[in-house]
Image: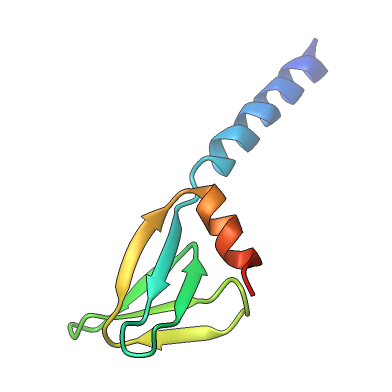
Amino acid sequence: MRRTLALGALSLLVVAVSGCTTYYMVRDPSSGRTYYTTEIKSVGQGGAVKFKDDKTGAAVTIQSSEVNEIDSDAYRAGLEKK
C-alpha cells in the first residue's frame, strides 16, 4: 500500500514538473538568426536578453531581439533544423 502511494505521488510530481517548462524562439533581427531556449534573462535596462542556445549550448546575448513563446513541438522542430 505504501509503495503504491509513493509511486502514485512520484508519477504526479513528474507530470507536474514536466508541464512547467516554457519554450522560447528568439530571433536576432540584425543577423536573422533564430535561437531556441527554455530560459531567458533580461540584462540591464537596455532591453538586452541573455540565454543559452539549446541547439549549440552557447551563451548568447542580444541587444535587440524578438522573443516568442512557442509550444514544445515547435521547440523540438527548431532544434532539429540544420
